Image 1 (spheres, rainbow, N blue to C red):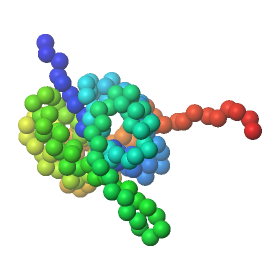
Image 2 (cartoon, rainbow, N blue to C red; image 1 turned 90 degrees about the vertical axis):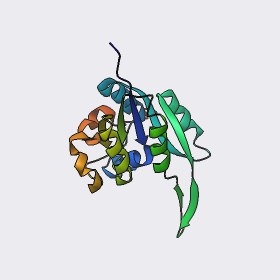
Image 3 (cartoon, helix red, strand yellow; image 1 turned 30 degrees about the horizontal axis):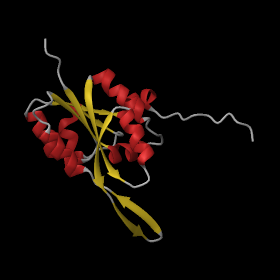
Length: 170
């Protein structure tokens, strides 16, 4: 019997910022394990803006089992604050379609309504397994697909970053 190939396509910024807005941090390593254990995800594509100097982070994510797809970033100033922008929407949609013939089912990780057409196409093609949103607030465009939606908040205890305690005395 052939095993179903399930790929995950992850909007890293939407996931990371959405979880942080809910008041906690995601442990990306635990999240990758969760995707494999819960959904049998064989490949997890993480779409992320490339920022020079973040090489340690990128190495960590690759060692955790993600396939990184980089987007060049733009840096601009908002008042006195510098902001880095690396919108990955087009890359996520493009790679999901380029790889369409390789996987049987897909999981999309985002709460962004810009992915409505992709979600619609995957459902129409009987390839949509799940939409994992970073929190309970997601685009109203995705409400049509509520039966597929699960929030990371529902399994927070399994994927929350707890950090290491510093036991050294000062």
